Length: 102
Image (tube, rainbow, N blue to C red; front, top):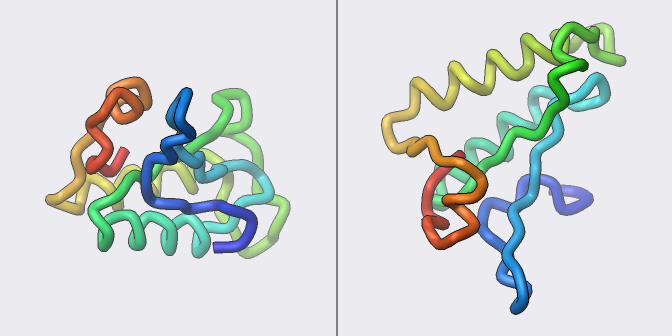
């Protein structure tokens, strides 16, 4: 995935750990987030949707894309329909439970 988006694992940087957030914003593309989610599931990795609550009602920049809130709802529905998904907080994932899809 271009630009580091969708890295489906915890990055151990020695003095701290990080996970990549998959942007759900007016400029995000559902196909990109769905591909990142699918990759995380296939690799038993981590997926983190990153958004701002104040953008949930915003339309997409692209005419063929759903609003930010609709994009997030699609990702939630996809995660709920995937039996292997384990919902965890970012803090729990970073503290060592790094095989969960978030």
